[in-house]
Length: 207
Image: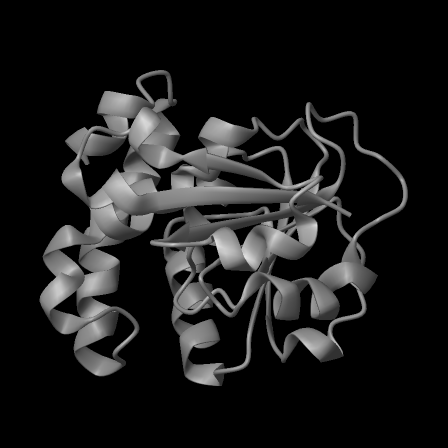
């Protein structure tokens, strides 16, 4: 939890409570349904919560922005972002029903009012949003093929035009290649000093 305050010191008391509650909730759920690697649960704040919030270093979503989290798993990056941006609307989808169930239960337990959930594959989701976010679900070109239909033509007044923001690790040049003239890759190590972020990037592609 100290990690979150280190990089986001201006969050409200309610947000602090919501972030603080995540560890116990995910620990309990992980004992029943493996949504996070068992050996990784101790690193929840660094490798899952803070990593998700890396997107907030790229863009501060304006109030009223709509965001779809494609392949959310147990709720990342959608739940941390929904806590950080309470005046934005988040729609979290995943093809694995039990993971969606965990994300929904966690959100309910912390009183998250700005997130909706759906058990579905990306191809089945017809809603339109200002942004799609995801965390290493599949190669970027494949992901863009699926979610292009979900990006609203109506701009949201954000600092970046509507598009997709993906959290990726390691070598990503080959994935960005088809979009090299418009894609923007941001090194998270420029914002977070922990070694985990050394190879982590946030990739933005306007659509």
